[in-house]
Length: 527
Image 1 (cartoon, helix red, strand yellow):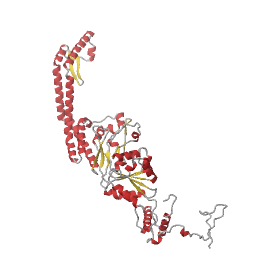
Image 2 (cartoon, rainbow, N blue to C red; image 1 turned 135 degrees about the vertical axis):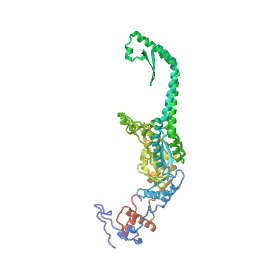
Image 3 (cartoon, helix red, strand yellow; image 1 turned 180 degrees about the vertical axis):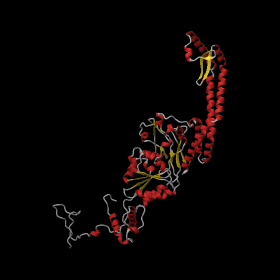
Image 4 (cartoon, rainbow, N blue to C red; image 1 turned 45 degrees about the vertical axis):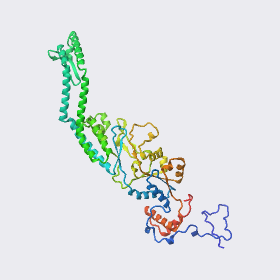
């Protein structure tokens, strides 16, 4: 019998120091080196190098996982989101990316999402959905409308016809006052008191020989004369109060009439461009209703559209562009602010959110500083991953979602309510925060694909009663693959794909056969 070959001094079979190497039993023979690993399919490979092999998408032996993923993505009912579970490196993300890249272009493109000013409650901007690609057109149309309004409305308010009507109202008020003051003027003349009209109302002044005395001249009068003048002024003032008792109501009516004139002029100027825009967007009844509210807001605040320069005071400098152009600051409420634009999206969107924090999922409301105070408006609303993926697919790493504060709770709430609502972390934790906006929520319709380990999936199934209702489809990756000839050839194509992807030098078929043999060896993880 052949003598056994002693183990290598430093190999795994080397004897410990001070111990004799074990001997083979009777009839035992040494195992040749070529028998220590599974033989590769080199003889069945009909190529010289992997440069001649067609690459393969996906992982061999994961047909059931791919079928489950496609089932989840195709199911239109609520709760059929997918959890892709398996060991890291098993090709989970690659499979998801490949299947989504195949399915998403065949699905309809979701609508654009914009926010608009809420004229009834400025803290709750309105959310509006438009056909894909129409958000940019709406923004351009509203920008053009604003440019027209800031031209035609101030022109109408400063035009000659309106000024003539205002002058008529002023003259009418003066006539009523003069008629009421006629007896008072007679009394005042008899007492040498002049009744003068001023921008602030009526004032009394003593006179002498038809000339009104100045304050210095009154002070120079003898004390007895001044006392007589003061008593006369009191009598005239009391008579004037009695005569002008209804005057406050006249002034109120006068101001209301002036306001009605201004509003009528503003409406006449603003209504034509607003009506023209409504005709262009008749496809969206809700937008047309909002344009009606815009017209009313313009009418009620027409004076804010006047083009008056602001002084460059320190406060104005701190206000920045809002102080330099108050009209531009005010008219921001009449513009559309685009949240999501699908003008260049083909099919359904695919969003991979690598940092699924609460704000990255739900969106956020940013602020700007004005005179040391944080302020905001609808133009500072930023969309989250749920907004961008709405109508399509959102892929998340399950462990990362669970590790971000309040992110998992928010995701479940959004899927359960089928609405996406912007939430701040401070608000969710009950902390005091700067006053902010509370935008109107949007309807949510998307598929969420979570990628995680098998242990994480079963843990969530045990501790979260809502998990299995929201993620009904487990996409389970196999850790072991049968070593059949067909599977070996698919593995060869996978090796060729990895070589081409990483731009490595092509493998010879003997090297590929060795890879197959190595892949068949069990590892410590059991894969």
